[in-house]
Image (cartoon, rainbow, N blue to C red; front, side):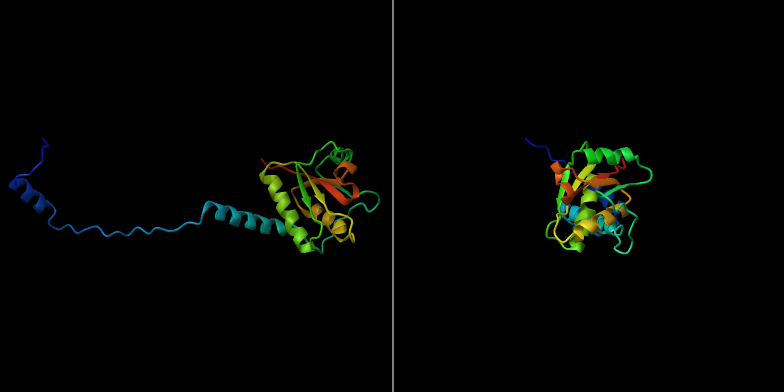
Amino acid sequence: MSKKNTLDDQDVSLFREAIAGARPIKQDTIRLHSPAIKQKAQIREIRETQQALHYFSDEYEPLLNQDGPVKYCRADVSTYEVKKLRRGDYIPDMMLDLHGLTQQQAKSELAALIEACRRQHIRCACVMHGHGKNILKQRIPLWLAQHPDVMAFHQAPKLWGGDAAILVLIEQNI
């Protein structure tokens, strides 16, 4: 047998007196539909790529060595790092192939590569620009030298593409 809690008339009248001036609560909660997690990640990646693009200028031309293989070393980085890149001591963990891309597309992909390397804690990457008409081959070192996260770069050894590729050493801000 189930017991029902029944209130006597006196309890009911006391309760009604206590809540005499009360009004029903109005539902005022607003439920927003937040974008899906994937969509948020895509938006973040686009924003980071656009922010990274502002490092690359076509007007600025850093002073790079024109003799021999293309190489660069930031002022606060040891030249020994460039030597290690040249010898192939660093193995690239990420590759970027820019064959067939326009300068603007290549610039965007290069910014995305550097940001992806930083996010995934990758220290060395290989950028393959190919031979072609030497447009990307000339522009990529100029763009890389402008980016603050690029510590050094050197023409890749034969194993990683020779004079059609560049090994890039990327700073890790942990």
